[in-house]
Image (tube, rainbow, N blue to C red; front, side, top):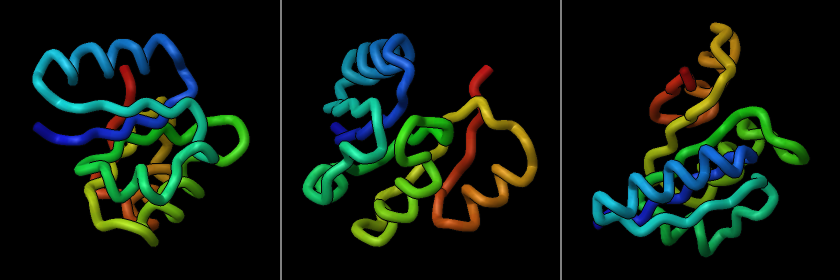
Amino acid sequence: MAHILAVDDDPDLCTLLKTALERDGHAVEIRTSGVTVTESLCRWADCILLDVMMPGEDGFATCRRIRAITQAPILFLTARTDEQSVLTGLGIGADDYLTKP
């Protein structure tokens, strides 16, 4: 069982992710804002899913903060498809960058 932290401001997507991942036996914590991601939560997570476009602290800033705390895999799951966003995400420490359909 993996501990997965998902950070996305879309409540419908959060519900979908939580349901699907828990059905597969994973423990899932959902946060709807990057500013609510704590150090202890980062240390708990085996894998972190991040959106880029969130109010307050965007996913890039959240990624930088998380990467300073843990080396757990960080995957961007976002609607931002432009090449610069992909390069930025990977350049600041994300392990993968996936676009939402």
